[in-house]
Structure formats: C-alpha cells, structure tokens
Image (cartoon, rainbow, N blue to C red; front, side, top):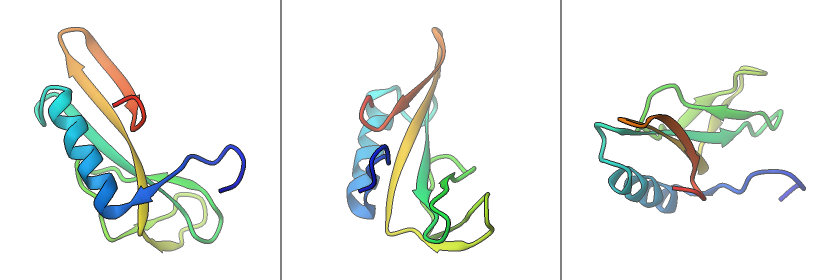
Amino acid sequence: MAEGKIKDFPRDMVIEMAESAIEKNGGPEKAKVFFKFYCEVCGGRCTFNEPNELFETGICYKCGHETVVNEAGFMVIIEDRNGRRTLTEAEA
C-alpha cells in the first residue's frame, strides 16, 4: 500500500463492516454508507453516489475508466437529532 493511501478491504469483509456500522448508528433510516474504491488506472479515490450499495464496477470521476471493485472502503453519514456527522470505516 502506498504511503498515505487509505486501506481498502475485500468485498465480503467491507460489506459486513458496513452493515455493522449502519446498525450501530441508528439503522438505515439514519445511517447511510457510501462505498469508496481506487481506480485501477489513475489511482483516483472514487465514491459511489448510491447509498448502501456496493456495485461490482465503478466509473472513475477523474479518468472515466470502469474499475472492477474487488476491494473497497466506505464512509458513513449519520443524520439524527444532533445533525449530520460523517465517519470513516475506522470510526464507525
């Protein structure tokens, strides 16, 4: 892993982590997971726009390449009475 690069996890593992983060943070009504991946061509860090959905492939916002997503990370956006908070997979 390159220095400063965020670690991604295998699909099965990251899905389990995301499901756990959603449940720990108020369920799908309050917590939305946005999966992230690295473009296999340019290395751009890309985020899927659809919450709680890890697609098989993703299009890079920088170079337009379609990457097969074998590993991913995520962020959690929580909206509750305290407002809106964003957590990384490590914080979730």
